[in-house]
Length: 182
Image 1 (cartoon, rainbow, N blue to C red):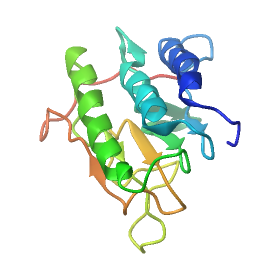
Image 2: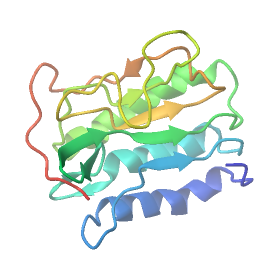
Image 3: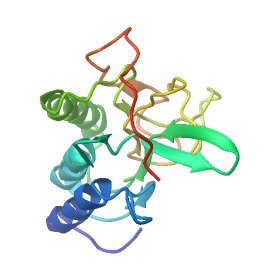
């Protein structure tokens, strides 16, 4: 948050996200939250990061959505909480960027045979009186699947209401069981 990061900073950060997504052992794992608001990532930087989130994982399965274990409670899945508000995007670019990112992410995941029964990206709306998502729960998740990421692109309320974009290509089918990632 306010680190003066530009699009060029996303290549090393994206590599880190992918590597951590492949390291479910030894207490490491993918980031659960990334707060990158008030920088200058632009469309290119945000897209680079979202593509790495789609690629993160291993032969055991995708890193996102994250499987979170809690003491005495069955593991739950939840999306990456990604805040990228105020990053030099023109107003008209928000919806376009989210739609393009969801399409690219879906292609990446299809190539890896990672299926999803829910949309890949969810935007966030708290100011519209809708049932907002939170870092702990996505309104679009099922018992064992959730969007890959919540993406907040501008202001407190998100892109243009709480919507999920990029339906998984296995729509209507339950996803294959995925291994737990600590």
